Structure formats: structure tokens, C-alpha cells
Image (cartoon, rainbow, N blue to C red):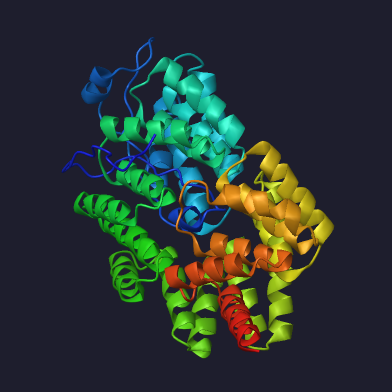
Length: 452
């Protein structure tokens, strides 16, 4: 199924339910989690599953975690509020990089289900979002399906289901779920998912138009920041640096506490050839949210600027953060596999992680990670079919093209190397602190060899 003709309908209602992310492994998905869209106004269900009429008739719950906690002090049996609190913890964990909040979320969902074991769509959908946040996408899909069996019109269930499917590599089903979500709740959170689906298929103009709809639907400062951030990421990923700067700056202005726009601006500092400013900006980002992908960016920057002791210190932080994620039930195999292959460290562990991810979820990102690991192990002939798999949707991803180009280089396929590395740099000439220079250097070597 193609989402290119997605019939998104413009809504003037602000997004009132939480965005459940696309997966840390994805370039877009990793940073989508830097914003907290807030808990939804959930319906007051009776003894049967909720219906759309139920939701319209129900009164709203508090949206913030402190307000929900205060509400539960005086209403400890409010199972709807416990489900809302659980989802709030999930989102706060994503926003702050604090996985220690995931057990709190689990406890809130368990309390909700103990109070209301039957027909509790909110808690089931919330647990699906929690499973997705921990990268257990098979469990996320199962829980979302259970929630949808009770109420197919629940947007939380549709969101969790689509997010799980896209990470499991079941793209036709995922895009259908995102379409269903847009039909149910046209607004910021559904449009951002639709835009991601379009981007995965290489439709950048369509993704941009859809995110502009999301921006038009954003009313709170937080939602305005999220929409601008999403547009900034899309612009950055495809080499529009002036657009990225404009959107990231608007996002940072709308929500000064959001980390995602600061990370985007830090990348722009590095791309502009200002390493001192870039290091300072990335240090600020890591101090605010020591997520593995952010720490890895700082490691790379320290290494290319020759600051090896500082890079080593960040590697220790990276190890500690990964241990914390693992202790709180988060699977980080995809990130581990890529970092291992990038730096040729812990390659046996990295290959095992990549193979496990490919078995669990044969997505384009898992295909790319396994291909890159096999290349690092000197097995390019095995890597190339997987690198082709990573690009099967038509995704315009500079890193994917770089990986395939370097795999072809190991195989001596000069024409393919030139094509793929040129494509990577055309998409974004600064797509990676370490790999963009390697792509340019490899192409220059081909040109030198051709002139001899």
C-alpha cells in the first residue's frame, strides 16, 4: 500500500494524545521521542468497551503527571487516571532519556488493570506503547491488537499498532494502520506518523506537506515545538540546512526545554565547520538527555577533532547508559550493532545483536544494521543483499546509500560505489560526522584511480 495519496483531513483540534515514537533506530524515529505530547483525554468506560459516543460524553482527565498524581491522591480507584499516568511516564521517559520511569509506567498500567481487568482499552494500548518504547515490538503489536479487539476506534491502540508494525518491517500493514489513525483522529500525532510513512517511501514533498498540516494543527507551545522539530528533522535528513535551522530554531523558541531541537542545532554547528561550537552544543544536549544516540554523536565528534581522552570518557557514559536501558527493559541491539560496526569494536557482540534484531524484526533498519556488521566482518557478499533490502521501499536515506556503497567498494563494483556514495552526499553532504568525509574520500580515490 502506498500512502502517497493519503486522504488526510485538516482538523482544527489540537493533538490530545501521546505520540508513541517510531523507533530509536530510525533517523527520524529516534528524535521523535524528544517531545512529550501529553496524556489523552480518555473516555469514562462502562462495563463494555468504549465507543466513540462514550468518548464524546466523558469528561477530561488532567494531562500532566503532577495533576494526575494529585487526582489519584483523592481518587485512588480511578482506573482511567492510572492508565493516563502510565502513558505520561512512558512519554516523560522518552522526552528526558530516563528509562527508570518505565517501571513506574508498568506499575500504573498494572494498577489500572487490577481495578478494571475487562474492557480497559486505555491500559492495554498504553502497555503496547510501553512495549514499543522498550523495543519489544512483537509484544507492542499483541497488546495493541488486544486493545483494538475491544475498540477499533481507539486512537491510542491504532497508534501503538502502527508503530509496532513499522518497526517489525510489516510496512503495508503499518501504513494501513496509520491511515486508519488519520481517519480516526486527524491531527498532529497522526499526521506526523503519516509523514514518516511517506518519507520511508521516498516521498519527501508529500511528507513535508503532511507535516505542514501537523504544524497548522499545533496550538500549544509544546505541540508547535514538536511540529517544527519534525519539519526540521525532515529538512536536515534531506540536505535543506537553511530550512532545518529555521524549523529547529522555531521549535527551540516554542519549547526551550525540548532537547530534540538542540540536538538538531548541534548537528548544524558540526555541518557548518564550527567544531568548537558543535562540541559545546553536543555537550549541552548530552548533559540534558544522555541518550545513546546523542552520546554516540559526541563520541564521533571528539574522535574526528582528535580529542581521544574525551571520546573515551563519553564511551564510558555510553556503556553506563546502555546498561541503564537494559536494566529497565529496553532493547538497544540495533544501536549497539551500528556503533560496533562504525568503530570496529566488540564486533562479535555487534554481529550477534544485528542478527538478533533481523530475526525479531526484519525492517529496513535491521537489514541495514546487519549488512553493515557483515561488512565490518569482511563478508561483503553476504551484506549486499541485505543492503538492497534496506532500500527496498525507496527510502531516501543517506546512511543506507553510504553503507551499500562501501559494501560495493569491498566487492570491487566501482560503478555501483560511485552511484551510491554520490547519492548519499547528494541527499545530505553532512549526513554523518564520520561517514560523510569517508564517502567523499572514497569517491576522490575512485577519480584518482580513473585518471591514472
